[in-house]
Image (cartoon, rainbow, N blue to C red):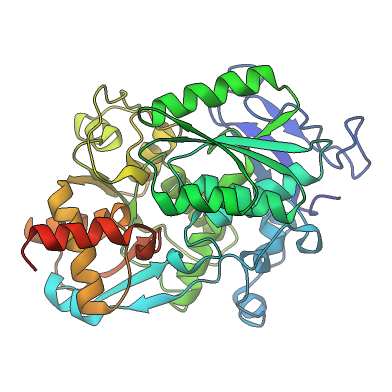
Length: 411
């Protein structure tokens, strides 16, 4: 499996380490392009590795993209590490960008749109990153992949591993939703349910990797390639707006992957001359677990882990996000912000979107509309804005949580 022409290798986001491709010949590891056999983390400082491209070698304009079918994230092949014909894909991406006029009127802005990632094959945004990461795993001499997950990532990884004929090992906290856990098994995954919260699942995952050095890690930033799938979200948003850059994109934030991906995608499109500016990026977190919001409010470049996380929004209850530093950079460099709201407000926002706009938003991504309502109440908008909210997960994955909230309100 060869890499794409412009893919030039990996760089560490924290130090000067580079792993560049010198030729198209096959490396000693059996992998074409740069030798990335130990590509989980930077070998010099253990920092996050990021895929890089020779963007000057890419000849891609708006007309070329518009001429292609809107059928999969792999339509952006030139800006991905691997060729489309080698991809492990179930046509993820190419999700709807839905106009929400009622929300716009309520917020007092020109336009609100929801990028509905719940329409991905396994019902979440995780499919974008797992498609690219499992494509990488398949080209290696590996038979097993593994990760710790709050639920969606694990379901997605099991699905793509099954498609690639790889064994998957998923470590989830006991509080993970029933649908996610059930579907890990349905997709053929080996699931370990760990008592406690996400930190306990991560510990069990690390112990398992130490015991099985032939397992390929698919944790959020344990592979450089989940970020590559995540960045395509930005490409689609801008194309869906007919090349208008929105004033703000609001993202439910746990690990920081979504924000980091949007910012990387925006920088690449700007460097290619496809857009002129980067939109303001906003992190939306639950007040019971908001390490990125707290770091942003305190003016810190890095977060501090939350000692006692407590939120019903399990998907974004990540007390020590691996991509916290990248998320904070994305927020600050884009002149964005970070907002935390209470669980009650988040659930009310998810229900309001379903009731008023007909879109099914899971509890955790309800943090995005909840955050925007909070911004509107603070008087942050002048009325001319175009705002995009990201619905990261289909509402029917945790319909019981939403209905329980309604029952608690006497509805």
